[in-house]
Image 1 (cartoon, helix red, strand yellow):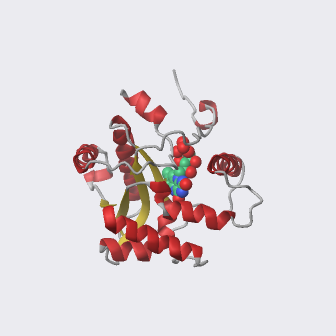
Image 2 (image 1 turned 30 degrees about the horizontal axis):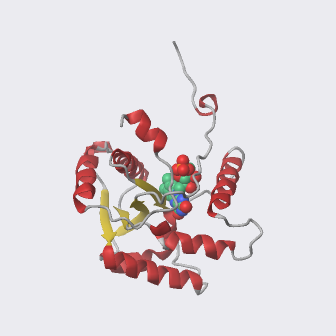
Length: 221
Ligand SMILES: Cc1cc2nc3c(=O)[nH]c(=O)nc-3n(C[C@H](O)[C@H](O)[C@H](O)COP(=O)(O)O)c2cc1C
């Protein structure tokens, strides 16, 4: 698989099979992902890979919290600005509509938020979730580094025939996650990354993208 194919075939997959992911494959991907760039080569990410019974327990605990109507742990960082204007709000709404249609969740369903959270707390059936933390002392530059690192991991997963879904949702259950992985207060959870093989026959969503001219300007020739 070349890089274009890896980029093009990466999607946020929300239906995983329970086929286990060999540990050796995860180790190969995470060893290769160390080549991701970071400003000053700080490599500020701290990653925990959770699978097997510990992951099953985490899913049970988080899902029970979601189903009990627990509003979740206080957020440590805002995922979006308080006000989202055009064109961002339109892109957000379009992707959300596509996502829920594929998951078979009706827009009008009063249970929609609980159902969405419960799918997330099950990590969409993924047998592996990788949790990416940063040292609390790190700033926006290092948060950008962590994003580049995670994209590198996601593309390498494609080269192994695997799929993934980044999940900021886990920050809502960050205390439950932190207790499991033993993350101390110096660490902030950036997000989870569900990893696994895609479930056969699951509906596929290919989210749209803005035209290049909307986001890129060439200056000079
Ligand atoms: C940092 C980050 C956090 C995300 N958190 C979630 C999440 O909690 N749940 C979810 O279903 N998708 C989540 N996504 C996936 C996005 O919704 C998805 O990447 C976007 O709609 C574009 O779709 P695509 O990745 O399939 O191209 C997240 C993506 C990123 C980059």
